Image 1 (spheres, protein in one colour):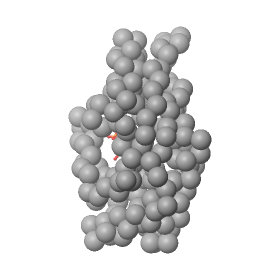
Image 2: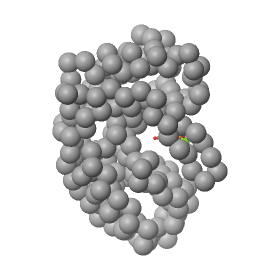
Image 3: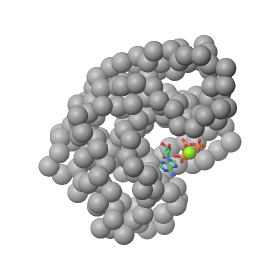
Image 4: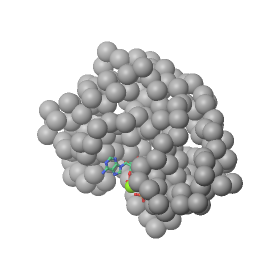
Length: 175
Ligand code: ATP
Ligand code: MG
């Protein structure tokens, strides 16, 4: 099964991103992420045998121990790629806490013998894919918000032609 670990977004942040997406809809063509699907990926595991789900959950649990909710703030819009197939995202700032969590999670996945995409971690939430920026002069300003990230979730991704859907398998929540 196709797996990834992500932080779910606090309500205030999800709401602000909804506003940013609404502004983008007025000026950029492409595929928008459904508001229910907004998330911040900490580690993308890809194809994993079903019997290893418990090990992934245990790694998440260990990575979260001794940490608390993460105070985070929405940052600037950013882009991966160019031309007509750009991934547009909004950055998330946490004074290094998200970086610390992602790094510890990846260490625990290593210890569990679970592999993941090892691209450097850049805390962001994808807002749209296949964005056509070829005729865009400037992007709208992104709505900002602060919030407290209180849980991380192991998701199973079901890819489909009309967009992926994510099934939560395990959640680790801070008090
Ligand atoms: P689609 O691929 O159909 O556009 P999606 O990207 O939402 O849908 P997945 O490809 O399953 O669904 O990705 C799930 C999450 O993992 C997303 O946040 C995605 O950005 C991230 N992700 C996917 N592939 C990688 C990768 N190779 N490295 C890092 N993160 C990835
Ligand atoms: Mg993808």
